[in-house]
Image (cartoon, rainbow, N blue to C red; front, top):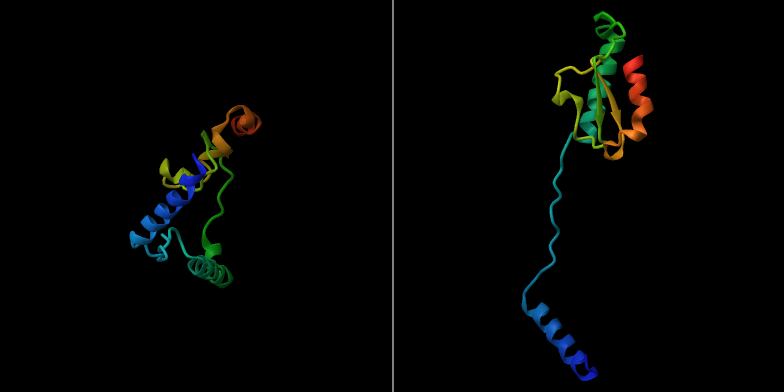
Length: 114
C-alpha cells in the first residue's frame, strides 16, 4: 500500500464501525450442571444420614470384578452411566486425553487381569 492510502483507509474503517451502531452489552453465560450450593447441600444431607445411622443400614458391597474395560476421554460430560444405569463394579474406566491406547496399555492390562 502506498503511504497516502493508509490514513484515508483507517478513517473509513473507523467511520464504518461508528456508524454501525454496535453497542457493548454483556452476554449472559450459559450455566450448566449443578450449582456449588446444591452440591454442598447434598454432601451435608448425606453426612446427616450417615450420622443418624440410616446410611449404615445398607449392606456393604462386595468388591466386584468388572466385566468391561472402557477407554474414555478425560471429558467429564461422557460418563459410564450412558452404558449402564449403575456402572459401579461393572465397568473399569480408564481415562486419558485423546483415548490413546498405547499410553493406557498398563492400566487396561491391570483392569483385565485383576
